[in-house]
Amino acid sequence: MFTLFAATEDWVLDRRLALAAYGGADPDELESIRQSYLADRGLDRPLTEQYVDWIGNMISLEWGNSFQSGEAVFPLVREATLETALYVVPAIVLATTLGLAVGAYAAMNVRSTRGNGATGIVYLLFAVPNFWIGFLILSASATAAAAFRWGSEFNYITVTELPFLYGRVLPVVLVTTTLLAAIVSYARAYARQYYTADLTKLVRAKGGGRLDVARHVLRNAAIPLLSLVFAETLALLAISVIIIEAVFGIGGIGSLFYNAVWTRDLPVMMGVTVVIVAFGVVGNVVQDLAYSLLDPRVDTGSR
Image (cartoon, rainbow, N blue to C red):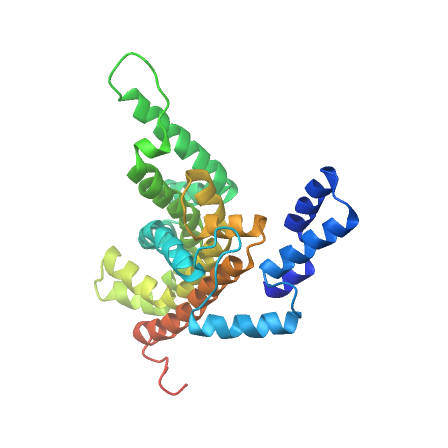
């Protein structure tokens, strides 16, 4: 991120210089504006010095102040991360639960109408962009809320009138549909692989019911599914939250990063990047621990 920032043109500075030139500033004044801009942001120093200082500040959690607002970056990123987690975490739990259940059902009913119907819905969710689903959810909820409002005069519903609906419930629904398609597809594929295995046939021979078979199949498929779910979640945090928070006007980590990019607010951009990278590192540790619980043959203590 730091290298990308240094390699790209500073459109904020270019816009400021263009406005000054339009106002009649001479070359000396333009150079003075440029030097003042770089000095205020600490960008007049060598890149190596800037990077070393940033590494030290990241370790000490002294992430500096935002170029745009002047606020401390660490509390700003922390609050935005918590705001995003309030709808992402419930959605991950809901999508994983529903995805495993629907995927196992589709795998055990491959040739049935219901199984094919579940698979068709999954591919439909894959095909529809999540921002379009968000627009449909937003429009439908506003129409429904207006329909139940007392009075004969129609008024549009704003986000501030129903903050819990627009800031929590609808984003959870959108994130769930975004993750659900991938989880169902993966769960169905891996469950089909284990559904015809000899161990599964042994469970049936011992009198195990459909629930016992599904539990056995999902337990064996859990390890590859865990990695795939984690990868989808990381992609969600890196890309999809920007779209989701733009649609619903949520002040989370996605909107914070989006605004920081457009204003070239380097401290905020780097702070958000650190959070996403930290999630990836912690997620890998959690995966290793989960592997040992799901499969006793995996020995994490010897690593």
